[in-house]
Image (cartoon, rainbow, N blue to C red; front, side, top):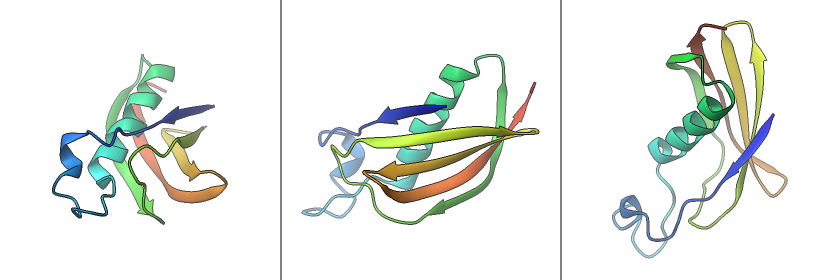
Length: 96
């Protein structure tokens, strides 16, 4: 499954996150990933992230594609900007 997200250049976290050259903070990225996963799996409860790796920065207004796959009690994710992988990891769930 796939979904996309974009963080607005007006997001309040960007003002202090490298002024003049803003990048989206990791916590904002993870929040968007969780929102997307929950849209597809409303009956599941997230218990935490088992792994997260940020490979490259995400800038405001960049459209990020998230690919998710199920693996036992985990949902694995990979994030791409254009064709470049920028993050990956897995989310622990109950109820699978």
